[in-house]
Image 1 (cartoon, rainbow, N blue to C red):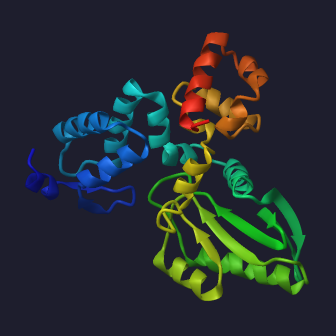
Image 2: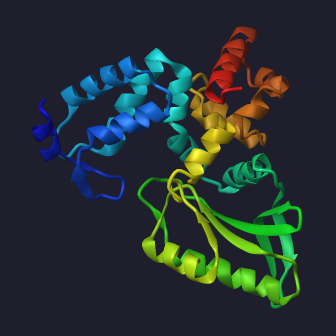
Length: 276
């Protein structure tokens, strides 16, 4: 299949929009996950053979993921990071836990689900992070499906809460909007105007949520390919969100019915995935 023909193939994004298939984008996502040059080439060749106009990007992802999984579990886990975050749902609490841990990895102390008194009402703040004299409130907008964006209404809501807390004399320096998907341009524009920080999956460029999670090695257990969906849900229900904590809680793995051999396999995947 030549490159000119590839450009004419339209694929359907999660939002329903159609866009030309980008082999470069596929290669980039595979390289970011740590796939070798030969593995990238092998997967690209497979995808080319399967490509049809109107194909969903989610189907392309699933095909690439299945090929990665057969070759290298840890690479497949990193490639599935965005899906792994989605799979933390439907509740947004595990995502809040992850964001709190991300602040800690970046040198802050952080607490999740804090009640703070405002001038008019009390507010439950998703994450309160501190570093020196700096104090941040972060609101986590979790979406459990692709294609959704956090819009300006979300930013306005967070700014209103921040202003009410500040009006009560509380020490807060910044408000953050953190989301696992995309932000609308109006949300970004408004945040810039009022001095609010926004963190989307790929925003800011090269410093988005996905890049920061990967850099900190804070992959959720939902990225692991050697756990079943039922095992992941059981561990999440017990409050275990991150791979790094899985190693320390062998008791929970035994309770979930895993054998010693299975646990050893899991440890190898975790160490490679999180680059410990």
